[in-house]
Length: 348
Length: 235
Ligand SMILES: [Zn+2]
Image (tube, rainbow over all chains, first blue to last red; front, side, top):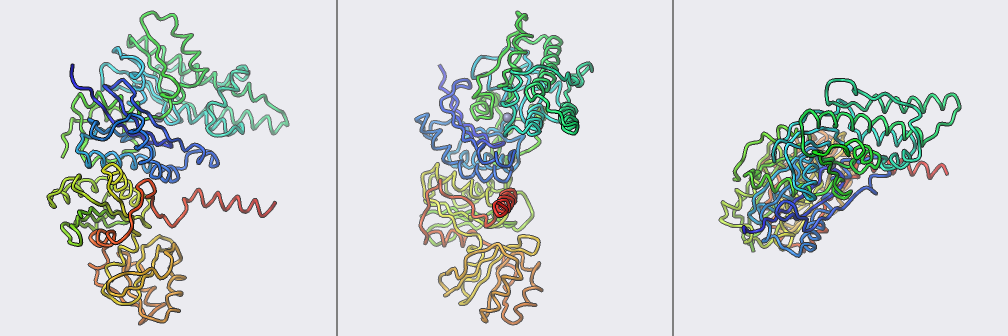
């Protein structure tokens, strides 16, 4: 039996300061998330400068808690992993600076991780991958269908052409006067309503796996606006249900088609929107008849941003020989495919 | 006592290693380049030149701001993470104070400032006795002309130290005339060596407590406060 591998992972791409220690790529030893959501609520969204200010206040406190919960010190760590992008640049920079500082101070290898690769690898903390697999990544910043033929190989076969699904949720929630973040509120309302408005299913009949949600968002806003001008009251639950039905129909249908085309063994749902009850139910219904295709949706705390997922992705990258140098920078628009093609670097 | 000192709060990036009061390495650049990319390699080089490994360090000193929000955060994050994880003390020092140290031999008033755009500066005023600096006024983010008017009322010579002095020299001379003294350009560049030196005379701070001194609210925060104060006034 080889020696166990321990990775300390850092994630600060948005408004959570998160660190985790992952054993052998699939076991969570400790997982700490300091959320800033209360600080951003009054602005109706994440304010980048304020996010950065919170990260720097939290960074060593979260590190202490992560080590304490694992009952470990830095000597026991084999490598330091960090989200290098995509995300808010000022926020990413705090994690990257901290990771480089730890790697240097304790002479440990450094591994840069793509945030979305992390979201996908969150599932490996629950169950081993079987290739080829497909991942539907839906979050505030992302709506993508990714094909993986092997570990560390990412092929984006579909993505949003405008807003991310989560972004559309937040904007529609704001129009309905729901508090930030709006996704869970819409999901809750949608459970009580009906698809009364039958909004367009964007790009559904197009021969591509791309998405578009900005038209839908506008349609919801216009419907609300027109009703207001006529002095009519619309049902919030039906609006929410109609919006959600349109989003989910497209997500589920396109993912299903892609899964069939590529003959995948697993479908992994990742990202914050994977916590959406409506989406989970629709996917379960659609995929339940597929005997050779396993549907994987991670538990809620692994769907939202966390560092355990970064550690899980880093573990494979570490085994594959990927090392970042001390000049590692935050890359707010890092593409997953470019990341997958990165060369194996050696440290300075 | 082996000290690592880090200042990335403005365009200048300065890293120094000191052994007690003696400067071993002082690595300083004054170029418009990315601190995030260059700081760790610079620390690596400085430590290597000093023949030290991280575990040899006894103290980390860091420039705490004011300055570029991002620049300050890169230095402070690097320093506090290192100090915390190596379990050694950390001493944050005002970036303005570090700059003013270049004027230490001048026994009088020293004003250091950083340009903060739209006519504003981050400014500090210190009194030097040739050995130590004493803060005369609280550091401020202020309209430079207002700050200069206040200096004028002092009615004594003031030595200006600033890497941004060329942007404001005319204004300074207009308001203060003969009262204003200037340094040769090489003394306008803040040095981490001074930071490492002064840090050893100051009390260490718990790493968790070390945060930048921005001297300015985040814009969203300022706007929010303004709006909510207005609301309150109307109620
Ligand atoms: Zn995410």
